[in-house]
Length: 146
Image (cartoon, rainbow, N blue to C red; front, side, top):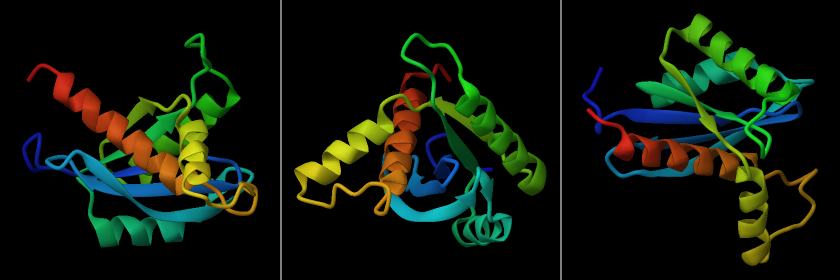
């Protein structure tokens, strides 16, 4: 595995209908939206995820953890953790969970500020939320002691 600061990272914004995906280089500290994968009641298309992992070859995977504002966990946190554990179990990659509070809200604000569609049911922001999750993780790496 490359040393810290040099890793390729794929981030997932887990949802029951869609899973947003973003990719980035730790050295640059920024992410780019990759895709939104459909999910059926939180069950992803594992073949599509496998293809993405094969294409991007990340050194670490980050999954957003949608904590409540009071830091407590909810049902979606349990589902996101389960998704992260399955990613690790299936693909044997390190998986880190990251607080994703307000990322979808911020991503929607970015879309509206840019004049985009407000129909978030049809035009999701999950890939943009995944970018914010990824950039949050990059920020946390900068504050970690080596």
